[in-house]
Image (cartoon, rainbow over all chains, first blue to last red; front, side):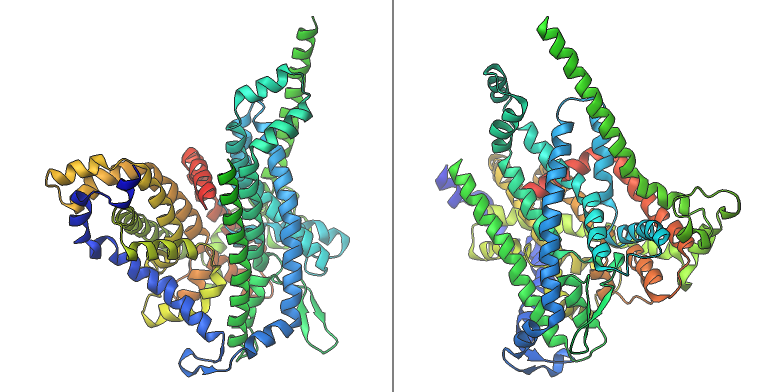
Length: 301
Length: 286
């Protein structure tokens, strides 16, 4: 069996190799244009000062120093981290609760599942505007707006993300819950375990893989959030710092990078690219941690 | 006796649970209903009476929809067309090219294949912000900034997940059938189209659903790559309406949002089973 894997029968692979340009060519060419080249160029440019790519001047790590000293970037980091953790906890607890309820064999499960998943198909920009209308409809009665207070912007985005993501995570949890062996639950029942004992001692340990996937998914989703952030508050309200610079208090990392690239101050593209590299290391780190963690779990099983 | 008692208690609990979930369901649908009622409301009342039904003087009839059609001096139907063109072409291109490449990667054991495969896996953890500036400049230089050429950018940036899922599936199907075809003198191209592709159908549906959901709703990539005076997708158009004017006609915006949600909901209700399966498959692997 193992041998076969290493030498996939020459009857197939030898003629196939002649066609490499047809099978691999388009993807490799597009992959270089759409990913490999921009990625390498991005790394290089993060060490340069430039307005146009053609006149980039190598300046060493000064972009990174500027990025770390940028108060708005540091604020965006902590704001994003807080958002990611709060939304992670809320989304997963609620999604698990809904999934658990829907696997109890109650009436209307399919209808409920359909409704809960629906917001996932609506794009982030549209979602942002739907909710900004709703929040302003509520807050205008109290003479305020979602754009006026940081805490409104924060919790508004949390509510929006819960509404959108609970259905998605619920689907993964339902798949996990349905794979819990029936005889294990039966055995627990016969042994006289209470409902909550069965839940915490039998069900949850068995859906651990789903929990890991959902945890990391919602964490990276939280970190990478852009469209919803842009459409709901676009970073408002502003706060004037001691130095006279303004920071956008509800601006998350992705939006901060975008604004540094395409915002008012010209000549900051180098700093923006350095921020993007830092952002990449952060998000990729989370992704690799997930991979390592799930690998370890799989080995244990 | 005791058993009958607990059974009836269980039934009662289930009914209560059903009722609670039904209430949550209604709350869940409310945002979409709010869009619906506000799309028939005159602009001035959207902000002050967001949750009121559009009755009496608030009723705007279909004027919001009529206004929305040419709102922002850009015809709405054009952005719908561009969204459809981009989504269909990109998804088709991704499905065809990545499934072919995935078969090659899974069946030919060479260094290049390994490198491409691991680069694809790697690209899945790279956020778009990392490459957005350089990618949009590269796309500009290569004249990939039209709805007919942007699928190449999507193929490049979105290849990772598709290749990952296809390779995983191809490795699970037995070699013997393809070998038999090959020994019988079937060329690789024919083997792919008449033997491999039919077997890949379920994965194609899953990958296709994920790509459609991504590309249809994507805002930043087309915004940076396309020339937006000429070509706007639906998300770009809606963002443009809100972003560029101080005072927005909220009624008309809601009418456009409603028009852009309706096809998505119809699509969802008709292929719900595939969508949910596709999402579950993509999540478990990604």
